[in-house]
Length: 501
Image 1 (cartoon, rainbow, N blue to C red):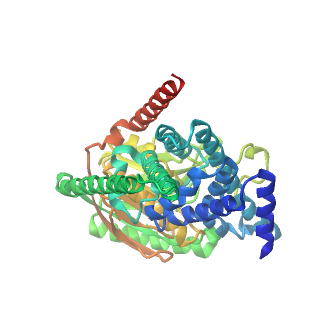
Image 2: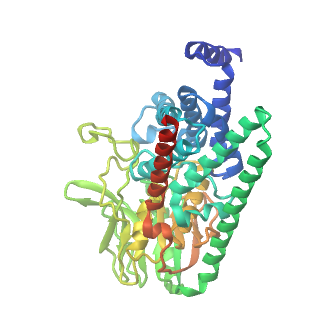
Image 3: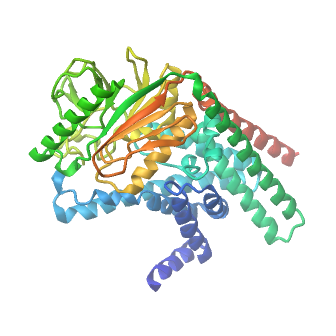
């Protein structure tokens, strides 16, 4: 047990920092990872952010790496990988390497951010505001690419919906700014207490007033979302959760089980006269048609070829058709899982049962005669800007088609928290259809209205509302965050001029 502390002591000696810096970095990062969904507890995160503002860049990097290792521990459930051709002795080391790689990348990003804030002067509110705004914008930009899943902007869910309701005004990036600035305020308050300053109690009252104001305005926003429920048209869709193990997806018995469950769902959808039957990501194999004609529209995850390239897609089957007439291709691909750089040159094209796939167009708007929807496939749910753009384009509700098998319930709950945040950001109802879960309905106020039990086959008659109004975030995007960054830079420049004079 003494070896880790000896190692930290050696690092502390080399970096000329006290050992407690590294202990605080480990503890703070671990606490931040726990505070993220599925727990979703902002006060824990605010406490975890206190040491981050006071640490040096190297220790801050350790903080960031630890936070990601704890929050992304579901990556270890990829093991075993023998079902995609990876030899069993290499499976666990490869999964550990992927997990550690995510931690190292986070450490580099957080360490670089802390170095910038240190040079600006972390004790100055203007520098803190600039640093927080840059962090928020970085989360937004990372969510548009392949290397991001969950960040500080999602920490308010499921535990604090009033705070998460601010997403309707400032999005996930703005929520990250709020968390960081509240953590900075606690850090400054802690310094005042250590110095036995008489200003400490005033600082505490101010900090509590800010928290109360955020909660009050957030609660008011939730009330507005709930009061407008009667404004939109109602519709029903049937969600099929087939619960087919991904590792056995192409086995004959599992394919037959899928066909039986799909046929039963089609019969129920016809009997109930729902608007659509929804299936999860990858439910249908490449070139697979529906087992029979139906009077119900079907939205199913599947695959198609565009030229020589394979794409994962959400396929639309019109009533009475067995073949898809429209498709929305997956744009944001999972690194190593669905795509690797230069993968076409190697026999191994990723950790996917179907091999490497290519991305589609970035738009997440799926036009239909019955009304457009905003649709994402699996971890595209992490990108709130795409669904906000779909709402601007006329999407009346949101659909997430996913396959989170073989990952544990931890990832499903993070997915649920992101679904709640996307619904709040755009003031839209969201339906999730997932292979093993979560299959659910979230209303525009971020409340999970209906949900199937995870990991078992089932059908969900989802009742939802179509909406057309736009939130401030759906209308303006990251403009408020950019203005906040500009205000921080202006204040920082002014303070520097005053000091020089």
